Length: 277
Image (cartoon, rainbow, N blue to C red; front, side, top):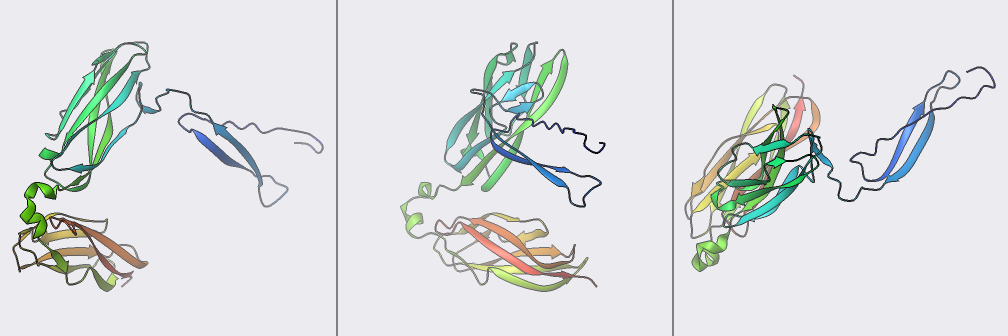
C-alpha cells in the first residue's frame, strides 16, 4: 500500500463441528516492523439443534466412538448410533463381520435421501477373553450410485472381572498378589542397547492367581510372564526396553490385570536415561 492508503484483511472462520467459544489469532507480517501485528477474532458457535456432527463420507452420525465404559465379564450391554443419509440418492449400509463378542443391527439397512436410521451394537462381556481397556474398530460399508465405499468407528470398553460369580469362599479367601518391587531403575541405557528386567510377585492367597493381561507403554516390550501362580508360589514378568532417542529421563509403564479382587490392577514402572555412546 502507498503512504496514507487504506486496506483491509478479510478473515473467515469455519464453525462446522466446532460448537462453543473460540478465540483465534491472525499474525500480520509487514516490512515496517520486526514483530507481526496480532489480530484476534472471538465468538461463540451455537450448535444447530439435532444436527449430527460426525461424518463418514456422505453419512452423518451422532458419534464415531461408542464407549461402554465399565463392563463386567458377566454382562451384556447395548448402545446405539444415529446415522443420516445426506445425499439425494438412497444409500445401502452394512457392517463388516463383527467379532464374536459383538452383535449389530441396522434399521433400516437402506436409507432414503435425508432419512435417519439406527445402528445397534450389543457387547457381550460374557464372550470377551481379554480384560482392561479395550478398543475395537468396526468397519461400515455403504453403497451409493452402485459404488461401494468404506469408513469405520470405534467401540471401547473397560472389561472387568465379576468376582462375585466365583462364590463366597473365593471372595473371603481370594488370591493375593504382591510384588517385591514395582519400580526398577535402569540407570543409563545406550542408544541401540536393549536391556531386560524381571518383576517378581507372589500369591499369598488361598486360590490360584491368574494374570489376565500385561501391557506396556510404547518403548517397552513384554517378553514373558507367569499366567498362573498357585498358593505360596512366585511368578515373574519379564520386560525389555531399548534405547532410542537420547533423553534426560524416561519412564515406561506396565499395567498388570489379575484376579485379585482387592488389587486387580497394578502399575509397574521402569525408569532410566538414554545416552549416546
